[in-house]
Image (cartoon, rainbow over all chains, first blue to last red):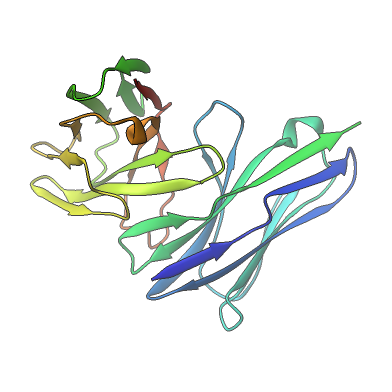
Length: 109
Length: 114
């Protein structure tokens, strides 16, 4: 089976840095994805980690530790448009993505 | 660029009715997926397909059926609609088997069963 945990909600202010954590227990791990989903819209791809370490892409970075079953998404220089749900998803045995319940981030001015 | 197209975008069904959610992609992706998303519950995988003629069950397949007769199309069939199937349904596709490929999602189909 698989279990993916992430906080339900987080709040932050414009210009700040926020870290969204994700822990997972799954068989056949083949990588971890982060997706962003604005209210009423489809998810869009943010990042992918298959090896341990940090992947940086502009204001967003994602980290993976396979031995700890742990990942985080780091958002820097927060903007109002970053208010969204952030979904952690694990590639299970290379066949399909299994998603966590998502973290709703609210950015205030 | 159409990408992944889902129809209908909204639908209200009565209990016991049947319907098909259509999904088509024009990116020549082999892998296609159906997810449902309930409030606060994240995305749950219903069925997926790794190529034409091949389908497999996901996490929550009960009450649904799929077919994959062509690379482009992956319809989802609800045979006897139940209130528990009220949800937002997302179709997605990927070029690779997710080894490094992202999912491309359609805009979603919002289904209400009364």
